[in-house]
Length: 242
Image 1 (cartoon, rainbow, N blue to C red):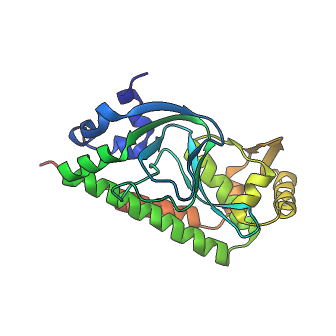
Image 2 (cartoon, rainbow, N blue to C red; image 1 turned 180 degrees about the vertical axis):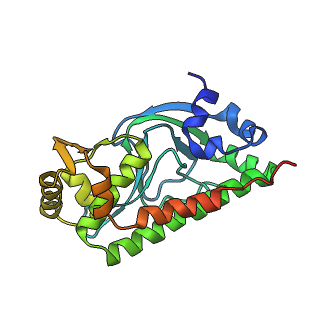
């Protein structure tokens, strides 16, 4: 499968005009990443941009004082990770790792910077995506402060299904605890309640959503707020063609 055929499976790349995409197309590499592959560790120089394709998913995690990583943001086929705004070479702040393995496209940061210098519309696309990523971080911070564990658990599960396009996701009790920043016992109780209410089915390391509408009712509206912002900010990036 060639690079161009993978483009529609990454929303950020597919939103680029052909002329802008062609600025980086010759330099894109197709990769297959496994669950748990580390893209950047804290302090690493950011030298490449990675674009998840299809159901591939990346998580940002920040180390807690007790040594456990707390997942803060998920990035899937809607975007990319690594040097989206910066000129590259800056140190990564957190751990960026593959949550759900699969195909990726990647490109050296200096190639992206050259495309930004050459095309104003290319640069604006990445700037707007960075704004959306920041909004996602702001919303996650607010969600942690005001919503209960059940609401947040439902939100994270829905977030993963929407990004992967699958109702069955690879999600363990420990994974969910990391997302919520709580002990494993809390997430176990929440998942058991969802199962008993007919909302989920669980198997070792996997969760299957059996009643999405009910799960949405248990969730907060944080995902909807982020999706709405993505739609408004990433829509209409290019001027209309007369």
